[in-house]
Length: 139
Image 1 (spheres, rainbow, N blue to C red):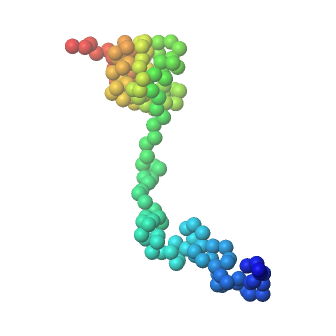
Image 2 (image 1 turned 90 degrees about the vertical axis):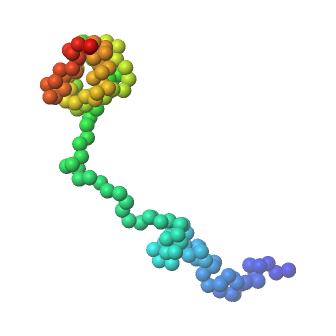
Image 3 (image 1 turned 180 degrees about the vertical axis):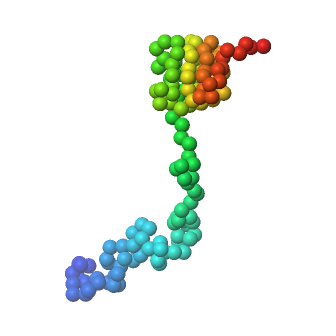
């Protein structure tokens, strides 16, 4: 019996048609090939929003990015009873974690939760507005 390969010796496409035997010719390319040409309907149906820009970005001059630090990290960093975070390059004090000792902190901005925790531990927070927190007596 003659093998299939030998049977097609001399024929140009071995019985597959012109493009079927060449790479991914029969399926119109591999992967996402042709989604802008012959597979447009597939893209519209199964890949809505594939192309184009989505959402928006604010201009960099309008963005405010704070370099922030948490209360728990400040306690580890402070050697004595006071620390100036503004000089260290931090813009804002946030209230994650806990603080167990009284520390006097100077920073540009501070969240309400951070100030409450520092005051509860017996310390003070001085913000960029020169407002002193922690010296108010509780009623």
